[in-house]
Length: 478
Image (cartoon, rainbow, N blue to C red; front, side):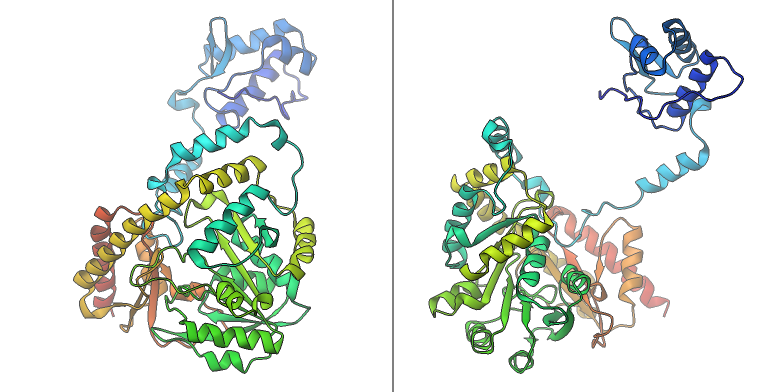
């Protein structure tokens, strides 16, 4: 158990004795749960020295606290905060009530939370082996290069070449703290103040926030269900950059074919525009082979100088890893590194080294293949359950890919209201409006996104039925 630090413990300047004052300030720390249960208190000698008291005063205060049940003495070890206080020593009812209320709030990783992979299936023992190995290497304890671990960059280069036809040298790869940092660096590297950014609408909400934070102009590209976005609106645009999720548009689930990708590459090359390609979950395509990445396709025709490629390990491994990467044309490397240096946010060196080994050993690819099969089964179950419990009243409009499905319904059931009702049942269902810029909403229907990554296939049907029951209950009230 972590020992307790004295911190801001001071005696009250009142008429009580030093022993009484010490008793009350320690009691207050314990009752207010500022000193954790089971925590080891400082020794009587250390506390006496810190507070400039006699050791007898401290010993007497400790004995009084122990007699009243706040702390306990352990032979040969010292004094510890009691793990279970008697009822009349507990904090006020408001604090207890608040704690109980918080327990009912669903975890942000609960059933159908979008963007969360199956955390139970990750090979944690194998991963721990690599992390533990590199945690003991002294050469990793010092400062590290801004660009990221060279072994990791080479491992990513080889993996992306085979899986996504990405053509690059390791010197073009920059390791980032997740995809969001990569997106920010990419925008700052190619944009000037008040330039316009073309972005899918609806689209990745964190990108909306980055554009607004950096004070760039937002130029929406409307995405229609099943069809995708209007390519002509992009080809006629003068925007400086285009942000796009071409393999599995988030959240509508459409994709760009090779002909469309070639037109975008030509637009960027001849018009001096930039394409920022977010390839966030291209590993998980269930209905067809994934299309070659825009970066890879542009390399094949010799026009890769206008495409920036971004990826992360959040969907393929786990979210809290916070590891992303940015692949830029050689001419942009130094500028991007300068921006990253100013932003900071490096990933720990031993984690980067562990990831390099995880990829190079083949464990990463084996995990991807396993999860591709599992997610395909989960997606199939999602479709079956939605069809069974919603019938013709709702449809899945997203393609068979990734870790989510997107629902559409025409009934007058408000998507935000339904999501709130679902949330009260411990299920997360994200309304489609979450992904939309409030000034550019064109829909005349309701919808929501359901992530199926971090839920057992056996639990899907029951949870979908709960959502459907709430859906029809709201419908009956209209």
